[in-house]
Each structure stands twice: as C-alpha cells, then as structure tokens.
Length: 335
Length: 297
Image (cartoon, rainbow over all chains, first blue to last red):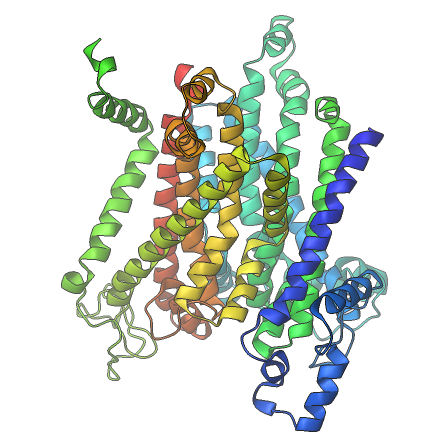
C-alpha cells in the first residue's frame, strides 16, 4: 500500500508543475502586451506602465518569472485581484465553502437517487422499470443544465413561488460565518426561519447540479450490477436460498460499487464545470460565478489563480479517489 | 471462401453485420431517425424557415406560439423580444450546432488519434510526456478550460470550437493509446513487423483499423458534448455572438424574459436536448453494436 501511495504521489508532482505552467502561461498567452490588455479601456501612463512591468517582473527572463511564480504559488501567493485589491488566495477560500456546500448537496442527491435507480434497473432488466429509469437517466445525461435551471426557475419560482430565484439566504438574516456552510451556520445562529431559508435557496441549484452525475451514476450502477449478477458466486448465493434482497443488496452491490466509486470521483470535475453554469444562473456566490465574473471583468490574476486552484482541487480529489480505490480493491495496488 | 481472398466483398458484410446489431437497439434507431430529420431540417433551413432568422418585426415582439392565445400561424413558435421568428432561428441554429459538432469531433479525433498512436508506438519517455500533458489538460474542468481559452482567443464561435476541441482531445489520446497497447503485441502485428512493414504502415494500416471501435463510440459521445459545450459557452456570452441564431446564444438573450415569455426559453433548450439525446441514443447503439464482448453473449 505504501508503494502504491508513493507512486500515486509521484505522478502528482509533474502534473502539478504542468498545471502551474499552464496557469502561468495564461497571462503571457493573451494577445498583445499583458499590461495594456489588463489595463483595458482605463489605459496607463508611461510611468505607471514601467512601474507595473517591474511589479509583475515582465522585464526578467521568462524562466526566472516562472520560478518566482512557482515558489510564490507554493507559499500561497497568487497575486491580487485588480478589482477588489484583495489577495486571490483569500478570495478563493472565502468563496470556496459556497461551492463546496452546493457540490456536496448535489453529490448526495446524485448518490442517494442514482445507486438505488441503477440497482432497481439492473434487477428488473428489460422490464418496465429498467426502461423507464434508463430513459430518464439518458435524458438527464443529455440535459443542457443551463436550460434545465431556467425551466425549474420558471416552474418553481415563477409559477409556484416555492423557491427564491437567487442567492444563498434571505437578506433578512444575518449571522457570522462559522463554517462557511450556510446550512450549518443558519442552524448555529438559532434564528427562526434561517435554516428553512437556506434550504429553500439550496434546493434548485443542487438539483440542477446533481442532474448529470445522477444520470451517470445510475447508468454505471446498472451496468456494474448486471456484470456482477452474472457471476458464479451470485448464483451460489441464490442457490443457498438467500433472499433476493440479501443477494442483491449485500453480495452484488458491494462488488458493483468499485466502478461506481470511480465514477463518483470522476464526477467531481463535472461538478465544478457544472458549478460554473449553475452558480451563474442562480447568482450563487461561489467559485464558478467568481471565475466567470472575473473573465468578464478582465480580472486576470483572479482567472489565473482560480484556474490553478480549481485544477489542484480536482487533482487532490482524484488522488484521494485513487487511494480509496486502492484501499477497497487490492488488485489495483499490486499492479 | 472466395470472400476471404478478396478484400472488397468483406466490407458490405461487415456493414450489414453492424446494422443487424445496431437495429436491435430500438432507441438507437429512433435516435438515428430523429438525428437524420434534424440534419435534413438544418440543410433545408433556407427553404423551410418561414422568415429570415435575423429580420426583426417590431410589430410582433414576444408573440406567443400559434396554439396559445394571441399567437399567429405566421410565427408558429412565437417571436423573441426583438420580433424575430423563433422557428426560423431554431432551424438556422441547427446548422451551427451540427457544424460545430462535426468540426470539433474531426479536429479532436484527428489530433487525438495521431497523438495516441504516437504514444502507443513511441519510446517510453515520449509516451510519458504525451500522457502527462493529457493528464494536465484533464485536470481542468472542461468548461472552465474552454472558457479561459476563449478569454485568451476572444469570444467567437470559431474560437469556442477550437477551445472545445482542445479540451475533448485527451479522451481520444487515452483511448487510442490503450487500444494500441493491447493490439501491438498480438500475433498479426508481430507478423506484419517481421514481414518488414514500416512503422507508419504498422501504425495506420495494421493497427489503427482494429482500434476504431471505441474511438467511434467516443466520437458520438464527444459530438453531443461539443454541442452542449458550445451552447453553454454561447449561453455565457463566450461563444457565438448575437445576432447569430445559435441555440445557446438564443437562450442567453432570452434569459431576462423567462418569467414573462416561457416560449423564448423553452424551444431553444428543447432543440438542444432533443439533438443531444438523439446522438446519445445512437452512441449507445453504436457501443452495443461495436463491442465484441456484448456481441457474443
């Protein structure tokens, strides 16, 4: 296991350097002089221009610039936002809990509905339930989620007035950030109705964000279950007279879970990509909206730093999934 | 016996076999028909569309669809806030979507297959470098990377397509490389090499045709992904620019009217969903028909 862990960690390092290189190259890849581009319509005086060149170190050799950037990144220095003048690092971690909360809720919905749906479809192979569930899953998988979000807003916010259209909580409530998770903080605050308000703001965005992972998990669970159900040991378990619930739930599902866990891990990237659209539509103050807004504001240090941090977050999750995978499946470790 | 000696009669046989398996999947056949119908509509958009997709009729803004109250049959699916006919815009928009899908898949697949073949045949160090670069690209959420690439290149449909092709391409590299790895130690490849086949011949003529099955399935998948991603970029204002009747861009323009005029939002999204769904149905059928493991069972 230790060797497996080390080999995984070793592949992490070059990928991390590569990701840093890409985010470093980002500002240099912008057409034209980066400082003029960053200044945009505001323009700069020649003195200020010289000052900025020195500040960003553009007058030094490119390798030295990259080295400075890399060492800065490792010390948590990702530059400062042009717009807010705050360090990118601080902004990221102030907004990250919002995205995390949304993603966790979405993945819980996706797992809680996707795995049972896949199991039911597999045990009813070819029958009505299987067809109905798998057709729904394929529709979910094909869904343009930005449109799905608008439809849900029309129905639940526009017509039924059940849920608010945007934000994380009503402006009526104000309390201190403890964990950064609105659900927990609203409970801790003890204010009446705060928790309900937080939940009602969270419902639609998490459903939207859960849609594609849910469909993927359901499809993957079904095919993994079908594969496992045809194994000899399942026939043996059935022949022993074990109840179908025990065979399907305990013997089959356990082994079918291995590929499903991989898919869940892989959907983290999908979640973050989905968060860009979902957060923009629901004005959810998280990383996705922050990145999109920064791109439009030409706040390039934020785009650069955000890109790097998001990629690192995805890499860390993938690493954890790989390690978990090795933990539950000894076959992988030995390879 | 005669069939095995010449190469030509084997082709229709293989195609017919493929069609036999593909036909078994009813969803795939439905998907194929819907897809074909949409392609026909897109090709004939100039003839079918009742109006010019960009002409504004100020006397008929936000007109509801013909069947609901206040609608008129001269605008069957209603009009948008600028008085443009939604049906005509959707029909012309279909062209963009298919065009985007085809171009992105061709770029991504060509680049990906080439790199995958090189990685599969190259010495270990080159293989490692190529695969690490692919890992790096895959570390970024696809839509985010595409967004940032478009921010560098400037927002336009062409740049959105380039960005998405770059983002989708690592999947082809991985698939091709994996297929090459399993094929290249097989006897037929070894005997071709012993018979004196050069590296290029081994790569493109001996091995590649036998790696195509998973790549074709991936092509169907990335076709639908490309359509979704370009629409998403258009929706975020980073894809096709107004007044282009691209579906995602149409949705973005309609966003502020969602609570007043449901049709301006509903139809473009429905068009995206149906197109993507039909392609994914076909993709499932392709996988079933091309996967030899499933065939035998």
